[in-house]
Image (cartoon, rainbow, N blue to C red; front, side, top):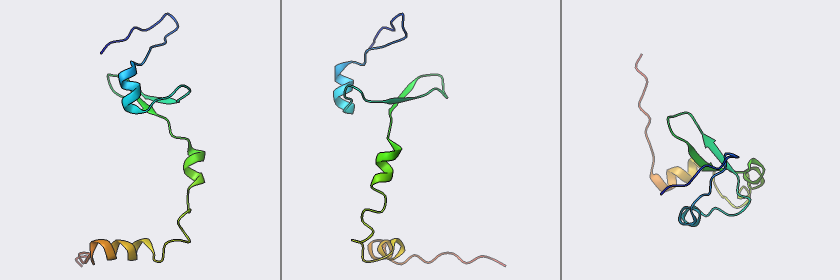
Amino acid sequence: MQTTLTEKGQITIPVKIRRRLGLVPGQKLEFDESSGFIKAIKAVSREKMESVRGCLKDKLSASVDAYLEKTRGKVDMPRKRT
């Protein structure tokens, strides 16, 4: 799939890709330019992430460690050699 860069440096993301990734008008993208190609990633709003922090706190009956032990079983950590 190809697209053309405009004089203003803009591109059109093909509709097939927009639909597959759930991109909508106004969607913010972050660009990772650390390699030899451009990688666009849907930006995540830190405020939206923070807004759900702790929302299940009152609904959970056990600590995270207790929950993991219940679902995965007890894990014996190796002893340190002295």
